Length: 155
Image 1 (cartoon, rainbow, N blue to C red):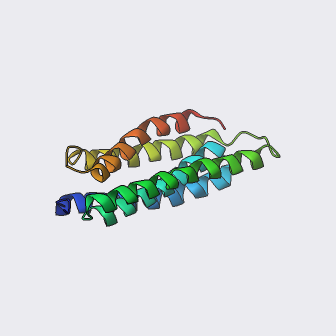
Image 2: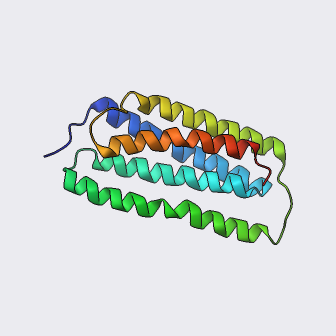
């Protein structure tokens, strides 16, 4: 049996995916410019969130068994930010300089704004049936904590 899918939910998940993709580009560029490992990690996390939301968008109308398989694929995607961050941290050891705090803080605050917007958009659907819908909401909600940490980090 397919999960009922509202047009509002589909539109919200699509918008969240696009916002995450757009801010990935911004954070990645700033991270490369100032040499920030934490900002690089957060930019990769935005890319991961884009992937998760696109997969959720695709899987919203699928049967429960197919959604369970998609959930396993999503779990694998969660490894990507960790691996990319380890690579960036390893390369940072060769040039251990602190990044410029102003662009770092501004990028972190921008990330916070994007994630608050996404969490707000998805909050209307947090009680919608289906684990994929809850996953989209939980992903956006937990990002707020990460952004506070990134904005205050000097790495």
